[in-house]
Image 1 (cartoon, rainbow, N blue to C red):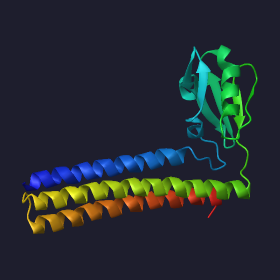
Image 2: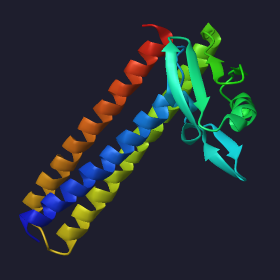
Image 3: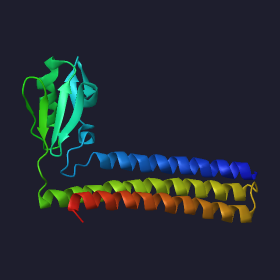
Image 4: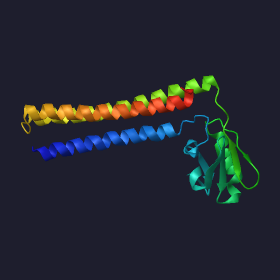
Length: 189
């Protein structure tokens, strides 16, 4: 095995770890911090046209004020369905419609709810770290197998393990940074 194959392995490791990092970033975007953000509605699906559809495909979402989201349906006949779907979601939101748009006030978070959300953030980031560690385990096993099959030297294996660890540490640090930033938003630290 030559150096290009190792570079390919490192590229694959980086790609898989970056995918895990992006997943964590997306999941954390759905955790509300008391400020209005249309991403908190990503999980809301509305029963429309005989199927469940994501809210953002049925309505224009905007944030006119820090504590308010407005959903303007492309089809006004879906107002009630959109309102019902938001109310049924586990987001704890209480939307109201005025016949044209659905207004979704974002209530401020209680201290207890902030701590609960912080625990949820920690759980999501730990899952992300575990995904990254699993990629590292897979890569290390492949390197050990390459050494066993005499396709790389012991020096190459050592360099490979060090490089995989360096990539892992970098991605774990990025997940930690995401967690700290979200905690700061939640707990006001």
